[in-house]
Length: 305
Image (cartoon, rainbow, N blue to C red):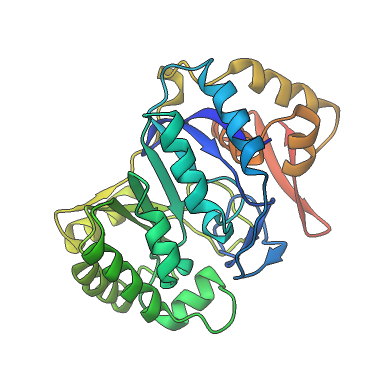
C-alpha cells in the first residue's frame, strides 16, 4: 500500500499521501516524531518501491476521488531517500494535473541531484528546526557527519536555482530550540534562504520522547512576529467540518482498542490503514478523551478510555 488518504492536512487541504519509503526508515530520529523511534537509520538512497505498482495504485485512487488539493510525498519515512523520487514525480505529472508536494527533512538536499529532482514538484516543504549544530543533533538526532550549515546552504542554493514554491517548516520544542540563541540563528538562516513562507509548528501530538513539550499559542505568535512577516503559526485542522474524516474508521479503532491495547503498527496491520493516516485519527480520539496512550517495555500502546 503506497497511497493513503485522502487525509485532512493543516497546510495542504485535502491531501492524497504517497509513501515511498519503508516504515520508519529515515536519516533522522527526531524527538517529536509521532510515529515512534527510527528503526532503520540511513542516509543512503536506494530503490524501495515498484514505480509501476505505485502508479497503478495512484491511478485507481484518483479515479475515485475528485476533491484532492495535493498529491503529497510524506508517510512514515524520509521520501528523498528513495532514488526513484524524481522519476515518480515526472510520471505523476504525466497522469494528473493535481499539484505535487514533497515534505522533507531537508538533509538530502545537500545532494545536487536531489535538488534537481525536487524542482519538478509544485511545492516543497523542507524542515529546519535549528541552525545551531548542537541543538540540531539533540533534537533531530541525524545520521553521523551531517552539518546543519551544509543543509542551510543547500536550501539557499535551491531557492537561487529553482522557482518551485518553498514553505519552510520549523518545529519548536519547549526548552530545546525556543531559546534566544536558537531563534536568532533561525532568523538569520531564514533571511538567507528566503522561503515563500515560514510555518511554525510545535508538538501537538504524542511523540516518541517525553522531552517533546509544546509551546503555547502566545509563545508561538511572539516568535512568529520576530521571525518576520512571511512567518505564520500553523493552525489546527478542524476535522469535524471536513467530510474526508471517516467516522467509521474511528469506530473500528475504538472497537479494536476496547478488546486490547495495541501499538500503532499493530492497528495499521489489522485495520489495513497506513500508519501516518491512522495517527491523525488517534490524535483526534485522544483530544476527545476517547483514547489514551501508555508505555510498556519501551513500546507505546494505545487503549480505550
